[in-house]
Amino acid sequence: LAAARQLGLNHATVGRQLTALEQELCTKLIERRTTGSDLTPAGRELMQAAEAAESAFLRAGTAVSNQSELISGTVRVGVPDGLGNYFLASELAHFASNYPDLVIQLVPLPRTFSLSQREADIAITLDRPKQGRLVISKLTDYTLSVYASKSYIERFGAVKTEADLTDRLFVTHIEDLIYSRALDYAARLGKLMKRRFECGSVVAQMEAVRNGYGIGILHDYATEGIPDLVRLLPEIRFTRNYWMLQHPDTKDTRSVAAIVDHITRVVRGARDRFIMS
Image (cartoon, rainbow, N blue to C red; front, side):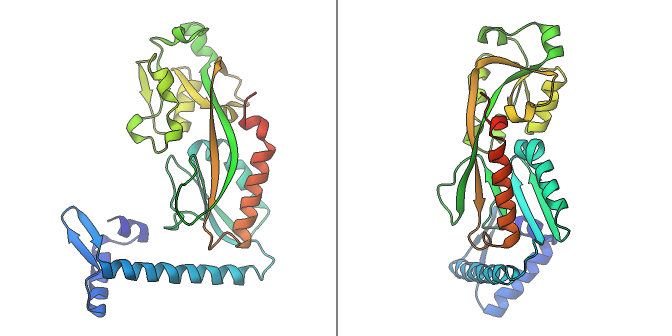
């Protein structure tokens, strides 16, 4: 089913094509079980050969495209939803507006992206990968702080100490849907704040806090320019990192390299926004 979704095909169609391939090769490629499917040794060998062929094709495409001075084609950038929605959306749209032959696909979602499976050409993650054939660079540190809206403070009173958080509504992540250990910062306040509104989207958390329904831990760079938000308990601050990943087969493609350079420049140029002093 996952393969069918990724290919945009009906799973029955994919099944028929796999069966036809097995018949043509006179060997079994997949062990089908009620709980799913696994590659056979022959299937793994064929997959490795196909991945090698794909890599060679991508390298050849990179070499050909770099003979042109144009920045063109389609580049997909997978990023955490906070960074994508509150910073990169405007920056990458501005960059794309200067290149009529370039299409940038920004995918701001609370998940990780697999470059080896071509889910994205460039990925920004919260954790530095410990394995995999990737080109990795640290993009920036960033900070998060505790926030509430002015209307919330007016209705429920000031928060001057951590003890004042007791019985307040905590706007936070859904614990069992957290996709990165870097999102574990909620544990500290969660011991005090038992009442919760949990949401898997950074944007939705921001909206809940901004509209005066609770207190949340928000990205400092995302709150800039929102006068309704008040930073609480400045002694509580969390520092995390963004890492930029590229696949070695496409990193030298002119369009990918240009976008990586642009992201690096604008993020590091906005250091004061990302790291609250």
